[in-house]
Image (cartoon, rainbow, N blue to C red):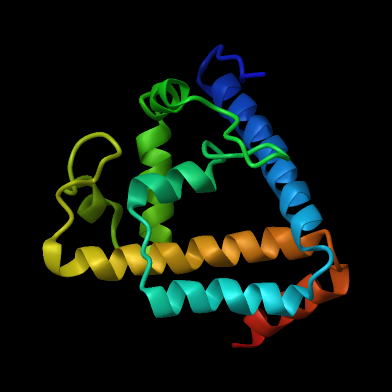
Amino acid sequence: MHPRTYGTQETITAEHSYSCQRDQENKRYFQRRIRKQQPAEIAAKMLKTMVFHGQGMPPRRFCRRWFGLEAINEYGQPLHQESYIVMLESEHGYREKCINLIARILKIKPNTIHRWGKGVEFDKIPPDKRQQYEMYLGYVDTLRMITTSLAGLEGSLLEGLLHRLEIS
């Protein structure tokens, strides 16, 4: 079921509700997949893959994943067709949300990201910064996946992680 669009505030509320629902579905999917393995082993494997293979994540894909547009069902199949995702990306306000999110994560000004091109392709990222920024976004996405997966498995594990993040 797709979110209904009414006015701007209703659209944002519906998108948020829909995104939260998709995050819960993704969390349940990953919980079922990793239940038999140790959560710490899974987290370490995911981080090693990101670090050793140098896999970055383009800003467009990062935003899609963060806002639940690349959500998958319990069988690992995409919930949305590409045409629907592109339509959502072109809606008023999506690009701004994406720019503000990336700016906060990369600790750069939103105006800098505005200069990276029109739409959500961000094809004008300075070549000398592209790999660095994409690596950071990849790390953040990996941490997002780990925390959402672990959150439902063991509450004390997530609390410990949050406590460590507050200390550092």
